[in-house]
Length: 393
Ligand SMILES: Cc1cc2nc3c(=O)[nH]c(=O)nc-3n(C[C@H](O)[C@H](O)[C@H](O)COP(=O)(O)OP(=O)(O)OC[C@H]3O[C@@H](n4cnc5c(N)ncnc54)[C@H](O)[C@@H]3O)c2cc1C
Image (tube, rainbow, N blue to C red; front, top):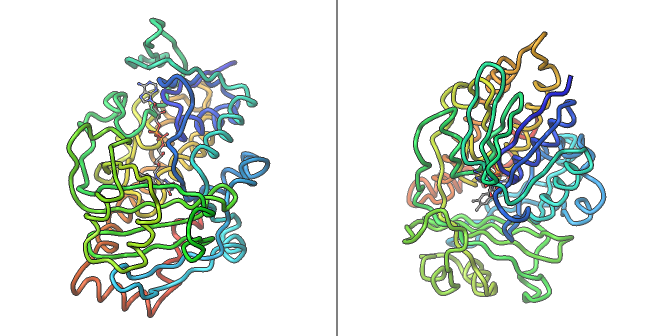
């Protein structure tokens, strides 16, 4: 008997959910409001917990593996004095430890790979079609779309991102909150940088109220930078493309070392994202209700200080695949299967949300906390940078 999963949203979470549904033997029908599948021009880090799933889905091959980079080192420095605090060997060492690589990539490359996999698996992926409303009854879940149609399926996944409007069908807790942190992002060709600023590593500088992360993408030809400062930004909080200038960022940096200033100065174009989040998921009830489940940022938006938002969306989809594969209304009905998805996911994502939030405090520490952080990192090095609880699942 054919069962269909409806998916609202065609970001990383929605595309991953479509692949998961097809792999579980379900039909998949996805609605994306934008006129084309597209991702913002920025990088992404994926830990072994996520790349393991991509490999299982045959995605760690072809274009994606050519464009992704497996950096050899993660290096953390104090952003005020430039001193090295700790290093973690990534590359083959980490890949062997966790059975999958630590990768950095351009978001568009990941999205293109997910899109191609969804299409070749037979998912129906529709752009320029906004889900206006969702509802469910004992027999099915349905959506009303901007094309005027009413579409029904056996289950619905709301993967409509940070500002999810469908979230309210599961968990009515209002909009996400501003974190008081602003992420400036830039991408630059390495060949356009002075030789001393080119890098094949993940490097993090931690300074009071600010941190900078750089890593290579696109086969190492480009360097991605994210610089997070504390402050507010007038205008639409949902906008990614807030006007941002190098001068504005330079002024917001505060007392940082020359290495941080040099990198900011070497990257001509910055864009600004006002960071929003929600408190950690408090129970399984917040992830699924009846025939509707939340995935990705719609379910558990988080601060980006563990680099795991997309990783958690991919893990969500893998868990969805597991429960859909056995959901068949005779043995395990769909609401019970989605309840199982929620039960199996909520504590994991809550832990990641909570640790990401805590990292924000540690990254931006000043005074005694900064001194304690630096002493701990210098003493323990790789042992505090490695994340077995996260990567080893
Ligand atoms: C500065 C920063 C750095 C980050 N770095 C990392 C990192 O290194 N590693 C990592 O794993 N994660 C990282 N993240 C997190 C990651 O970007 C997100 O968690 C991830 O992109 C969420 O994907 P999503 O599909 O849930 O949401 P989105 O990407 O927001 O996709 C939602 C989609 O739904 C569509 N949509 C919305 N409403 C509707 C509707 N009603 N009908 C139809 N379509 C709709 C939207 O157009 C959009 O395409 C970072 C985040 C930030 C802000």
